[in-house]
Structures are given as structure tokens and as C-alpha cells.
Image (cartoon, rainbow, N blue to C red; front, side):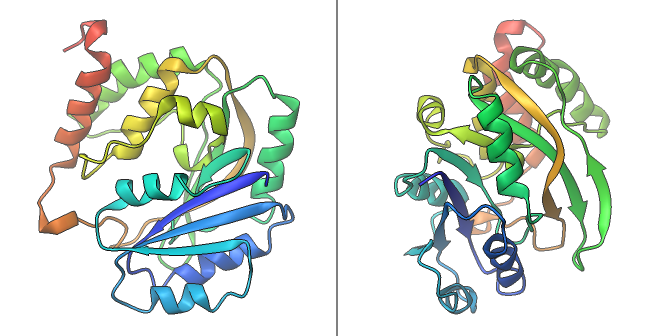
Length: 246
């Protein structure tokens, strides 16, 4: 198995078919999709099970949160490379092949990343976001300084897009699991940890992911109200305090 794709899902009956359809038609065929259903109460499970493709592995768990679901999914993966795929998003038809082929030419990297397009509920393009060609160390420093300051100004810029990552399995294991105590920004915490230990990363100058923004994009676990910016600031303080910027 070449690529394992992690997909935690919760109540995505309106988008899950389009997401999986975009995976089925990929021109790269050597993949597995590990779906962890985090206690969906709508028709999500029924829709997923309607796909008769042995590469799609469906698992149900009682509602526990996205990061627990992601960690449980990783434990089931068999692929040489790992990536994530949100259940309401879409992949361009060459998303996997372009990333895999690029990685083969840059096999000394720990992970590669690419560009992303934001789309709305209907799938209409709203924004294109390019990643940075800087090194992992330089990107990490930007998050510790410029990203923190942008939070204060509410003018947030990102230099890397984790949903476009293709990650070597052993590197993923070195970074470790997502922090299950976090309700929000567990992916942000994970890739800050990854940037600190990565020896080499590289950007593929290509759009490999369509990120859908809609009213149901974010879900608050257990009805807790989360100050998202405060959570992100605390994550930055945890990882960047040695740079003496706080």
C-alpha cells in the first residue's frame, strides 16, 4: 500500500459522497481510505457503506472528537505515506498522483506540501492560497512571530497547508499522535511539532486540494464554547516560548 488517507467524519451526509467520489476517480489507484465515523447520527454511515470499493475501510466509534478519531485511524493505516482528507472537501483528479510523483523526486524530504483552493458550499472557488517555499525552520519561526501577531490583528496568514501534506510514515510516527486534549487546532499543534523536527520539506507548486468553507465546517465537541484564537495562542506559547516572543 502506497498512500493511506485519514478521514474522521461526523454528520456529513450532504458532502461525504462528493468527497469520496473525488477520491474514487483519482488517477493514482494505490490508496486506502480509513474512515473513522465519530458517532454520526445522520445518513453518513449509509452513504459511505454504499461505496463497494475494498479500499474504503469504514470504522465506527462513539463520539469522542476529531483528534481521537484521527489517532484511531492512523493505528489502522498500512501505507508508506500518510495524508488527511476532510469529509466535506474535494480532491482534484491528479491530487494523489502529483504529490506521490513529486515525493519520488524528493525522497529525502520528511513531507511535501502544496497549494490549496477554498470553495464555498456550492463548490465555487473563493480563494487560492499558495504555500511557502521556505525551509521547515523558517516557516516555524514565521508561525511563532508573524502568525501570532496576525492573530492579534485578525489578519491571519498561513505559510503551509496541512491538508496538502504527504508524509512519510516513519516521520508521522516520530511526530506522534494529535493531542487528544485539544478541542480545536489539534492539526495546527501537530504540524508545529512536525516543523520543529523535519530535516527537509518541499512545496509542490500545484493545487492539490479544495477546502470547503460552510456554516457546518466547525463543530464544537460536547457543546463546549471554544475561544479558537485563545487556543491557538496557547499552542504557540507552548511551542515558541523559547524564542522569547511572549
